[in-house]
Length: 589
Image (cartoon, rainbow, N blue to C red; front, side, top):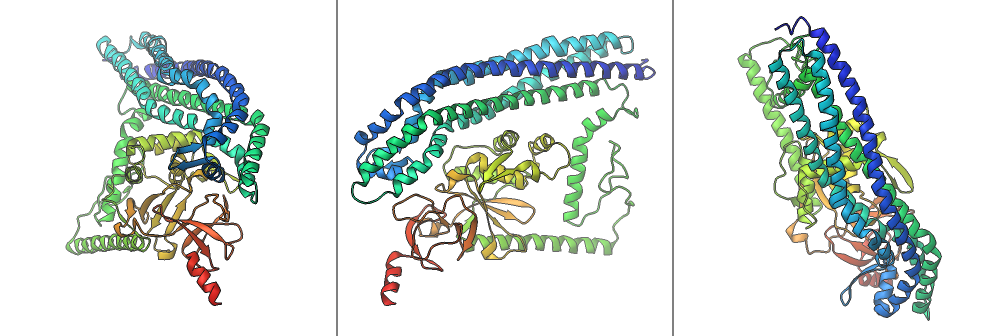
């Protein structure tokens, strides 16, 4: 075969056609985004009708609450920003009732789009890429190199490329379905919290009113406030839904394009003319990425147990290996003795970390929940276990990894304590942010602090981490990861952290699940309860407290235990105490 002599010609033609193919795929992806946006515009038309309907019915809906609910339930709902669970009538949600005409207006269109139309568009796009783009360019490339590659081999190469492209694109569509389903549910649910945030000050003002005739004034002022806000708040909900849909469509487009880019690279590697040719770096990088990763992991594992291995001065990809340049030597008896002692010392150190973590967990009333696998996915395994513990919708570790990295692409920013936080600024990996997200989406990639924070924001769940850092003591061993404004009344996810190595799922100790353990302040807007909302966290008397200038001695607080036990208590200046105990102390003084 004259393949070797003509390698430069083949290489040139492959690079030229692949460059043209990449540009064509880029153009096609722009057309895909255009098609997706056309579908969103149909939803916008329905949203406009829903906005008008919600505006027209808002005041009537508000007046109807007077007939539906007793004054105690009405007041309790207002005190809790429109949301209250009553034993007699079940869950009350003023915000949802106000926005429901808008939600109903898009329900049919929304269901059709996410259950059917979106996937028809994506499958049609796949067919266009496969039949009218990749196959066409592969045929074009085949014609240019057929003089240099024997026909049977060339046909096998073409078939391999076409089959690989079909598999990659269809597999990616299947993988996208779980992510899109989760994301569309989140978008669909944002309308009610948005209304709540617009009416929050009105709820506060109504709740603060007191004295004779307070119930009638509360109803009148709430009706007046809703009437004032209705012209703007439903339009803002509509705009936010459209903006979120636009962002989701962009992520879908970029995701499909990234698969196409990898396909172009795979075409280049498939046509690499020579295995050992000095310019065949594409092939060597592609084939041996996993080899290098295994090399590094094996080296790390050996170092942990005091074993020295030599993989040679250079890997087959041309990159330095972790043991590059080290001489090949046999372990003498004294060296073996040192290696064994080092292995024992390392084991002892790891054992100390585990014991410290168990002590800290015990101090905070927690214990290990089974054994979280140490498979490189331990953070996601632990969070999956916590969702089961709290009886929340089940998510596998693999799905959590994909969802959180996709969520990070969509929402790298959030507001905390009135300041904008951009998680892009905390990415330590050099290079593109999307590259970091792609890296974190891979199996066995260890979760870092950015992923931990993003997980809390995505799940809208606070995460409490018990750390075993040697720089902490029992009092300072809790790390609180805030999941957002709406998380304070939810039970948090409980996770332990072996210092620098492993995450472990936790649970409350059996003896404390029904006790009055108090660790965190509940921000429920209850009558006679002091407020400290959305403010910096500090620790007072081993309790996490959200406050600006500190707690007010003598004021009542609803104290929420980590495990859901609420108590009305009084802050005496140093401690939280039962009202009876506080009153006894005051009488004695």
